[in-house]
Length: 142
Image (tube, rainbow, N blue to C red; front, side):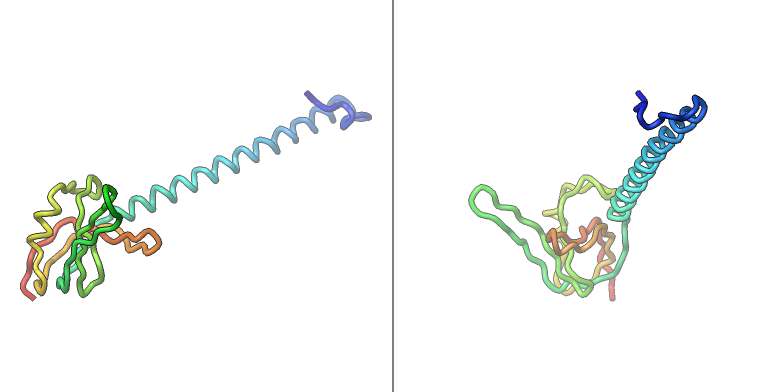
């Protein structure tokens, strides 16, 4: 409903033009909000996609350790692999291309001092104590 006091003294056609301009302004705000939402969704999808993008590198295992945090019934353990290329984790995963549910066996096959061609995904995010996850590996001769 139009506020009549805004349109006092205007002809009928001038009132219609003013109302259309107001409607276009509101439509512009909705369009801008829709574009902004689309941009945010595209950025989130791109980040998730790049996180799960696989990388391949050759590295030498310097040390490996089963790191546990917490106490009592709330203990959480992660297989950590420290290499000449930085730290990686070796954990079960459902995503990242090839699902893996045998991280314990895979961790046992990695040997300190040996060199491997490794397929991994993810980033090192210190804030969340997160490491790239080794997906597959194969021993190579240096």
